[in-house]
Length: 468
Image (cartoon, rainbow, N blue to C red; front, side, top):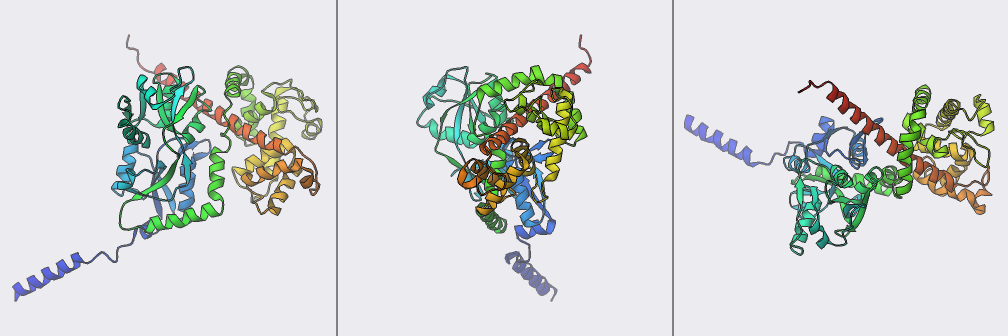
């Protein structure tokens, strides 16, 4: 009898082992039950990094939107190498890899890609001080280095069959941004980078140039574990369908890349020189004014550069004066007696910017609120209001900069400005104004971080015990 019971128990155990785990929550339910979406990414300007106001980056913001869509919190994981990202997804230690990953046939063998959300070009990068390579064959005459496990390495392996003379080194402990810096410093001759990575870095690494593309345009996508459970993947498909159709994806791309489409080598060179020779005289004033009016001093300084190139004696043909180029009327309203006094001008400009920023309704959120503020500082609050009305009449969102920047230029056209309350304005000017300041701000913020890193290194060296 006991033996029969033992056999029966064994059969029941085998039966339950053979039944699929019907009661185990699927991946989507697991995420929702835990209240946490785990996303693996990499530290880079195009993906995720710590900005002046906290975590940011295109992939970070996109993942944050998806977490909000699911009603959960976002947890970011940043491994040390690109290969580790794929390993983490393979082992299902994260729900998604949102890391600017190029969709390739080879990668599809180990991961499931979500919908494409951005198109890039894979480009050979060289230093303009050196000879430009015109073809794949020319790469054999210099040092070429790429990130290990990258789509660039995969592409080179494909090209090797056709161009057997090319060779390259692969780095597991470097990001594309670091390899771009090595090309800038002429440590290596070439690297391969995605076009969006170059666009963000070329503002700082002024010697970099594109030699040629090594492939047709490529698509970027999120990576999911290659499992039978597609519940989270299916939900992501719905999410992307929504943000593509409601314009949120376009707005996000504009936010991160809209101001870097035009590279001005000469202008950036002059700006970097002025940071070293002019800004040092007024930096304390910008910081003091920013602290007083709760502004970012880098942004305030960027506005000052756009206005006057940090020239305290600047005077325009229309009569605006000083570093912040205040009108006589505005200066009077702010209690500024001498517009050519640097500190007075900077304090006045900061106060005026803070006033404009506060004036906009709460429906305009950051960072759009800042771009609206800058545009209003340039063209006037009421002209910006007219552009918002036009945007609304055209079915656009009057509270989004990506939409209003398309209607501001219409204020210079009679068929449009005659319908507005405040009439004609050179509406294209504030659009260019905002984009310039965004570039200046990014450069200055990058330079400030470089200086902090240099100072930290110097302090570390100064406290090290002498070996002599």
